[in-house]
Length: 164
Figure 1 (cartoon, helix red, strand yellow):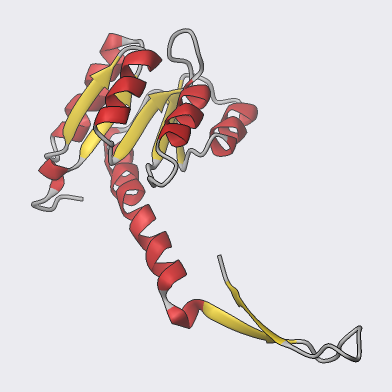
Figure 2: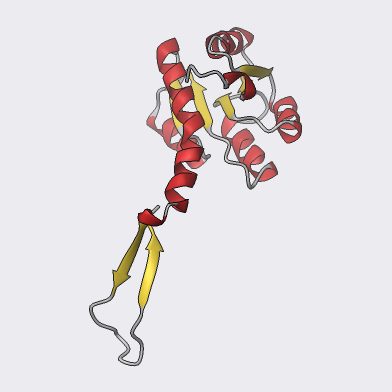
């Protein structure tokens, strides 16, 4: 997303490894994003309560808690916010990928991280909430379902369901 409004997007990077945190921030900030860095879940959570991030990039293991627990806590703190999360990890195990999905992560990257892939996923992650909202709010995405028959002869109805 190499647009002119990148400087209005706050990206929160949470990783207890300073080298990894700085490397991610260097890549992401090269595109004009504001990078906020935290080395532990408590300070990251406090920052996210005060300044809603546009994106969180979190290690799966931060400090005392997992990145997954941190993500769930942030989403509880901001229940109406649509904060996309990208998880990063040294592990390539399938269960880590599944855990990241279960925690609300939209992308997972294993280290070493390719800077071009990271930037592509940041771009997609930042547009995802807008696309989902537009999809839900667009009337053309509603499907009318008519039952060919009714189990109860006294009930005949047409329901409209949104496709998600």
